[in-house]
Image 1 (cartoon, helix red, strand yellow):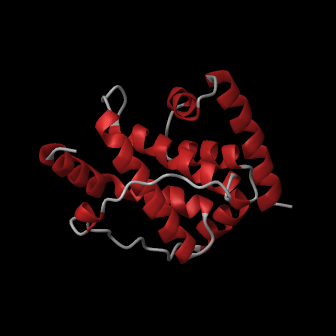
Image 2 (cartoon, helix red, strand yellow):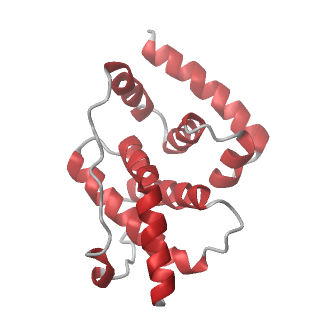
Length: 164
């Protein structure tokens, strides 16, 4: 990767890295797993960045890479994913700590979301990030109608979990 592209990636990554922390929060239960998943998603973003054409917003692209990486890792934990060594750049990427202290309601919501399937987690995550159904369907690779139907079912399931 050339130096200009490298600097652009680092700058954009630092600006949008909270997206990755949010994905990690949805798919992990402890700080160690969070850090491991954050690192793996960062590596996948780094590998894919030279191919990013800008057809979608950078944040949408990061959501897609992050969600796909998280789903792949937790569905097929025995599968080894090829990674690229980026130690030469790692020292230049500053990671901000993710504030884990959320209100009790948010913690209850996360516990309820953890009970959903992997795809449903991704769908509710994008919905909570105020993505419209078109963006959700593009990110997850499902139809817009399917996204709406699944979202209604997820809302019903979360209500049942939160208010037994």
